[in-house]
Image (cartoon, rainbow, N blue to C red):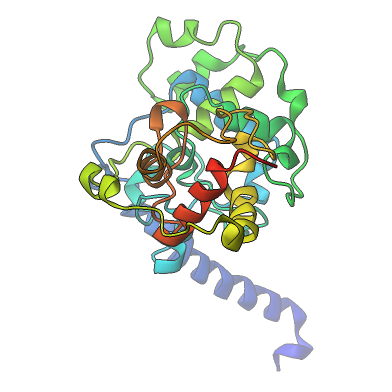
Length: 293
């Protein structure tokens, strides 16, 4: 009887656990992360991005954020940001992978698609003071990352990982901070695989007219939508912060409809066409066009 012979029980338990581990964790690596899994568009990390990835792990970001969009439709809609579910070929250059399973914070596998700003302004503001852009966030502030980046082992890392790099890549590290590196890594996530962006035809956007002529009837809901989706970049009173001021915008309603639906990638403005239905977009426009409050 095993319960009366703890040594044999421990040995057998160890054997069973190792069999399970081998089947589920070790054996799969014989056929994943191979050349057949590679996706042509997925590129190795640059030295700056790799330094950012190392900082991401050093600060324990992977303890709260996963990096894998599951195949569930709800997961793709919530964390795909216009992309699709995660594929093994996306992680061919990850050592180690950071898939994770816990989501105290949102999944970040496609975060580079959500905030395409080449300056990384949203990420910087968020890292320095998370509640300045997400009021309910319980994420700690990382303003202390605004210090010089230690590049002592950067070249050695790139050689060890066998990532292609040039002297110009390494020179790009000069004068950079840890914050710069982390933002460079965040901006890359999810952006290698081409995404077919949903677009609102100009003719269709122009043809539409705002159905909410009674501003007072929708003002409360419109203000709520604005605070939820827009205030972090355009200010609580539409005064402008990361993005331009919107109070009483002079843009036409059809232009605003197109901008909100499609976004403006060059300026880091996310597209809200898949997140907000047409009625909500018009309510937002109604609130933006108000020149009072």
